[in-house]
Length: 252
Image 1 (tube, rainbow, N blue to C red):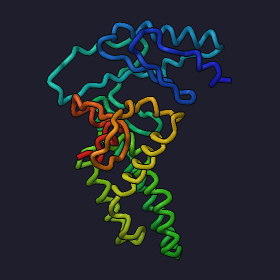
Image 2 (tube, helix red, strand yellow; image 1 turned 180 degrees about the vertical axis):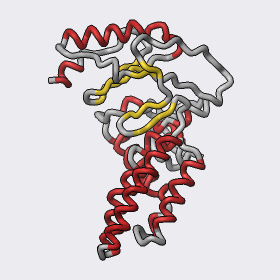
Image 3 (spheres, rainbow, N blue to C red; image 1 turned 135 degrees about the horizontal axis):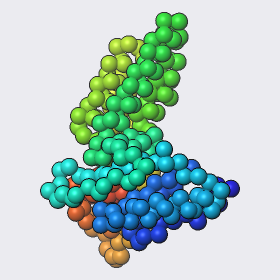
Image 4 (cartoon, helix red, strand yellow; image 1 turned 180 degrees about the horizontal axis):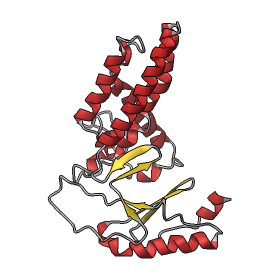
């Protein structure tokens, strides 16, 4: 019933984007439309009351995202009444900062995986076979490290990736994993390629609308990974997008 009702909830200002995931709702407002924040919030509040729901303002937060490396600066808007402004936001398990850094997300993953590593050491002390420990490590730790990697990988730095690699290398002497898991990038590359292939081959995929138009030529100079046009990379931040990264992968 909620999914049916939520289908009617849309942003009322052109250019604003409303994203809905189960019972979580995120509204994205560009800086040029920052004056519409109050209107959009009142619209969501009115829609909730009309559908016998309540907007929980205590759980509603506002994050002002900005590219700290950009030379262009904008004056941040004033805080909304009864709405907390914060610097981090967790979306479907991925922690994003207002500077679009993945450092805090990686830190959270490392903390969770460290707890799992302690549990594996306890299991090893209880004479659990090494093969079973390796399977648990792959199913739990590697799964956590690769979770939603297609979304956050483009925003991670070399330091973030090194922290992940160092963690796995420290786990090898403890007997929790095998040496073939050292290169975590191979797992992430496989996840990226699989997702991109699904988007290309399934026109009904939820991300298919993000793909550019197909290349309309009658010749093929060399084999290509896809048949889509290349979207211009206007900024470095724009290049972090998953679709942009995959379009340009192996293109040079």
